[in-house]
Structure formats: C-alpha cells, structure tokens
Image 1 (tube, helix red, strand yellow):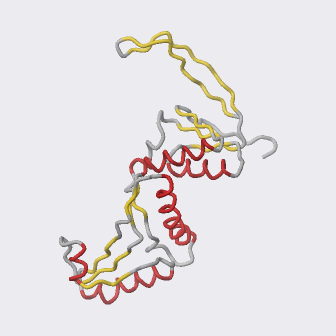
Image 2 (tube, helix red, strand yellow):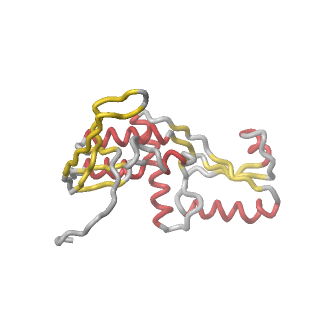
Image 3 (cartoon, one colour):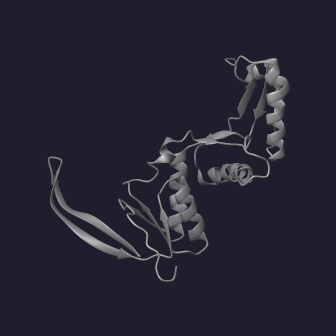
Length: 207
C-alpha cells in the first residue's frame, strides 16, 4: 500500500498559490519501484512486461532529474571490470542490448568508439597489453591496437606512442532513453506517480 498526499490547487495569481487543499489517496500495487531514473524505469518496464502490477514513485516532478541527468551518458564496453565478475558480464551484454534497444525506439546514440592511449613506451609494452588482455577475457569485441599514426588519424589532437581502440564504446541520450523506458512501462500497465516521496517502508506480517 502507498499513502500519497497531493495538493489540489484551484488557481494561481501572480505566481502565488491560492485555494489550496490537500487530499490523501491510497494505492495498491504488486511491485513498488522507487525512483524514476534510467535504472528505475528499466526495472519498471521489465517487470511490467512480465505481467507485474507496477507503481513507480518519484519525489521530483519530472523523470530523470537525479543521478541519470548528471551521468556522462557513456555506453561502456566492459574494458575494466575483473574477468568473470557480474559487472563484466552485465556491462558487455548490456552494451550490446542497449544499442539494439536505442535503434528500435529511436533513442539518440552514437557508436563513437574509444581510444585508450599509451603516452610512454612502458605503457605501450605493459599497461596497454594488460588492458587488452582483460577486455578480451571479458569478451569485448573488435579491439584493435593502433600505432601513433593510426591513432592520430582518428583524433589529430592526441599525443601518444600507441593506442587501443574500443569500437563498441559510445554515448546515449539518457533523457531520451528514460522516456522510451517510461513508454514501455506504461504500455504494459505500469503507473508513474510524480511528486511522491517514500518516507518509510514497513514489513508486514507476511514479510
């Protein structure tokens, strides 16, 4: 159960509210998702597609105004995580799935690729091969070792002795992604409640 308080406004004058009253609603859902950022909306969409009755609550008055709005919007390839870790597996698989999802929903994205540069011979002979080995152990596809000339052909402002190209790295419009996920969630019956803050969660007798 969710107890939610709303302000019902009967009008505005000169930027001031007047005729304001408060009402209290009781709502019930199988699943409560707290937060309407990219992660919360992705969870809501996935749960709703599986037939769950989902309610998403967000204390702000718009979606995607918290951490999601301040991210770098990078689509990571999975280069850095320890091989075999859950983060590595989910990052690599998520990278593949997100490009497909964005293309199918018209979400803005670009498969820009990423250059990891070596600025010394020591990095070129040690650090870069170690990074390549880790990335390949994570099943990152398409990695290429580049000479200084090849790297500068891609980005003339780079000063390096060599580089590693990760072609599956990219960027995404996080707000467009959030809107697409919200659309999917609502299309499968999920409900969004903005301006709704969770103050306390209590465990009932059934756990």
